[in-house]
Image (cartoon, rainbow, N blue to C red; front, side, top):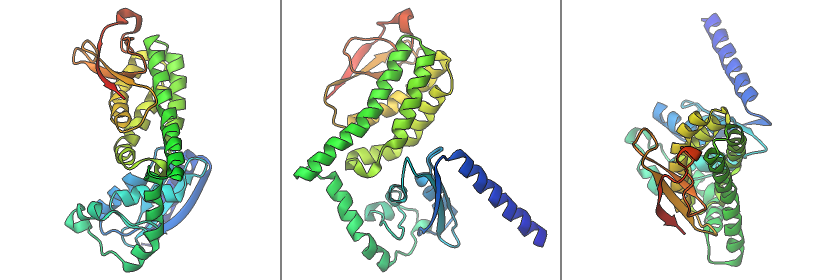
Length: 287
């Protein structure tokens, strides 16, 4: 029995070491997050985790989470807010009541009165960040647009490289896109942006990373399709200074068709490049 415990301890240590090796500028903190079961564990960790940026390990027995994160790209508050938005209270942030109410019965943990008291101020601050009805909030809104603008601009740079069938440049620009995605501060997003970002951020990072990891334009285009779909969902709820054109090529994706976003009304096809440069049409103008 003793040897089994030793092996388990070694396994945990090795896992922790591997996690730290993957995350740069790693810092680790422990925080209490309320929940009940293995399903809670899956949801909490999925909401908190970000590839190469955050690793969350939650223990359903102790209710304690070990959070390892890149201190240059995120912070504990941002991580705990994501977890709260998935339905789970921590000692700092309270999950929205409607989100908590949608948790499965087995996951609806007992909410502590002291937890509610502790998060009243942070909740108010978050609402103020999302307001557009005063001068300070207007400044924050401009900042919000700026940080998402970097994400969109890097996406367009990947698109332009694929139009030229330039796998090297596409890879480089995808790395910059991944950096921009990881740098987004969720507490600076509007409520609508926040909701969509929670749904698409992992897939955006996944596809950007795959495009960055290869110089094969064909493989990059395979990941550019879902990247464009998720970017479309995000740009639909974001305020942009200029129109964005949602375009469609019926020949792409083995004849099933595929979309992309462009800052130009003129069609320049990223899926075929010079082979069928103008194949496609504008299906929506997003303002």
